[in-house]
Length: 239
Image (cartoon, rainbow, N blue to C red; front, side, top):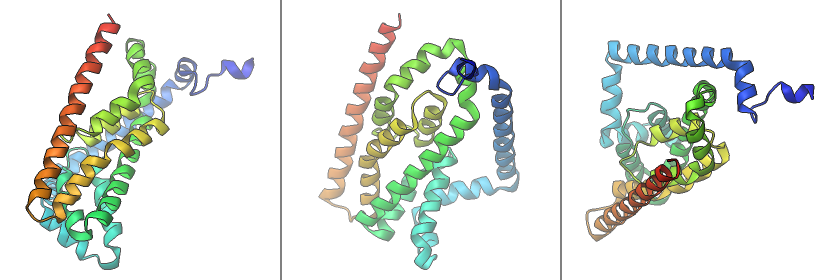
């Protein structure tokens, strides 16, 4: 009985009550570190340099190709950085992968690197912010809903290229969704869009390119329509 009363991560109320100071310290530390990094990038002009690099497919290609036998490792590092540093764009990196490594190898490297970056983003958010969300009574119903249905939401959102990959990962980390569900939903949901962008990077203009773009657009529209219907149903259920 004594051990049960101490609270565990499976008992959010007891766990947060005994560890709220730890959560606050973690959150404050995360905000300070993120703010310091953002300020340093702004003051030194490196933020603009990073944005320029991740927006330019040819520059990424030259950087990766110049790494020689370490090219796959350098490419994966770029993908992880892009996934963790939220504002950086992703399409140019994936297209550079298709041009440099070919469709199959480029897809596998891009999928693996982006998945690793998503996992890191999820972990950062879970470590520094989950406790405060779990302790907020006003978010309890939403938190329970996401914990139960979050996997399908993440999966559907991953099918829509216009939705920020990084934002989904960080938001999922704040919720009560399990890591396993997040990992599976991300791994499967990101595959179609990843393949298309990698394919575009290595393909020559033609019917195949248009077919890939149309297929991705149709998939994204269907995913968006499904998401709208699901959220509408949820809003009615909570009334």
